[in-house]
Amino acid sequence: MFFYPFFCYTLGMIVIPAIDLKDGKCVRLLQGREEDVTVYSEDPAAMARHWESLGAELLHVVDLDGAFTGEQKNFKQIRAIREAIKIPIELGGGIRDIERIDLLVNLGVDRTIIGTSAAKNPEMIRDACVKHPGKVIVGIDAKDGKVAVKGWVEVMELDAIEFAKQMQDAGAACIIYTDISRDGMMTGPNIEAMAKMVEAVDIPVIASGGVSKLDDVKALNEIPGLWGVITGKALYSEALDLKEAIAVTKGK
Image (tube, rainbow, N blue to C red; front, side, top):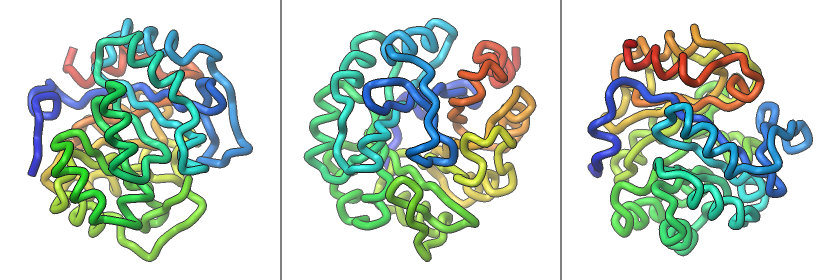
């Protein structure tokens, strides 16, 4: 099992701002639907600097074009984000093979997030974890407890918790768990499902989907052992203040 310092020595659950990239812009999608897009910024690097200035310890970046097509389309913006901030970056979307992981690691991405490829080709994950220990995260998107892939358009007959255990055994450094029925809906996270996932595995788990207000962060912070939470729409709509959310998780 691979761990590395950033996962070991954080104090309390961390709050992770999300930047979703589409056509070079910072956007959000409603429940992962490509046609339901809201543009929040034309300058993703400036947005990254903004979140860092407010105290973010880690930035979550998704290449949505990559998620839907299998090919990264926002290298320029990813490079600009990396050059703009000092905090670590985790990046997902369209990462289908070890060669792409190599490319992103060389670009300065601290952790790569593998989703569809992990479900379709678990041996690739095992090989990637050996080659890049501590730098491979598995993103598990679930609907009704089953794994969803290909930008959430395909739901597999694969239990999310069992899949997480398999990925832990393969050497994944962390699990990002998203309840896609809650993502972008501002309805609150699925606390029960998240707690079950945290209890089921020994590696860090990051919650994603449904955070709409400070009370949601407080509720997630009560889950023993939950490592972090990703939030996007709530921050961009100003329903959640990043500084306040960080203060809650640090007990300030």
